Amino acid sequence: MRIGLVVSGFLLFRVLEFVAGYLAAMAIPRAYFQFFAPYTAVSLFLLWTVLFALPYFLLSFPWCAGTLRWYRNSLQQAAAWCFAGMTLAWSLSLVNTMLFLLDGTGPDGTWLQSIVVSMLLPPWYAALSAWAPWLGLAAAVFMLGRSGRSTPRCDPRVR
Image 1: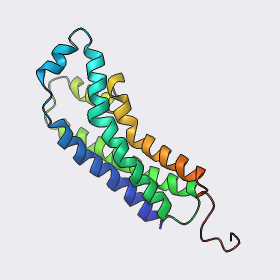
Image 2 (image 1 turned 45 degrees about the horizontal axis):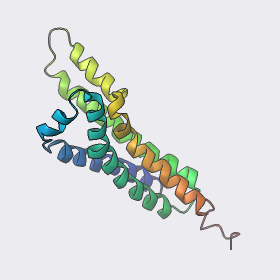
Image 3 (image 1 turned 90 degrees about the vertical axis):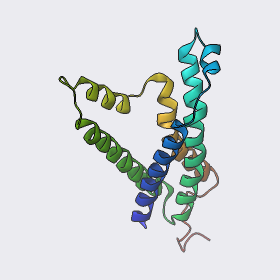
Image 4 (image 1 turned 30 degrees about the horizontal axis):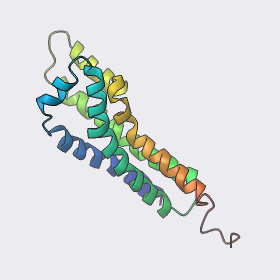
């Protein structure tokens, strides 16, 4: 059962990476950036929130809620295993990016360091999209905890 939770968290992140690639390919009209010309940071924040954070949250929340509802033991334990799968996939993505970019390092290699730092500590305008999958898991735990799902369903003493 626990391996299913880890696999579900892992697959969630892989699906989110696919969705990110699809969403990143969308062309943003030049007029959008011209409208926000003096406020570039605001335009980037709105763009990242609507284009990435909202779809990530809207995909991860029902995914995590369904996964946690499926598990028959404690909610906290299920959330921890799902979190482990998500963290494993994120770590694999970080290592994958580092290995892919390490191939073409320049003379000093500082650009690789800046990319890794931006993956670990994203810029403020992209922070919400970086935290959206984790917020989806937290919202699912909160919702299921409030609905009384935190008591084990398979415990024969609970009637």
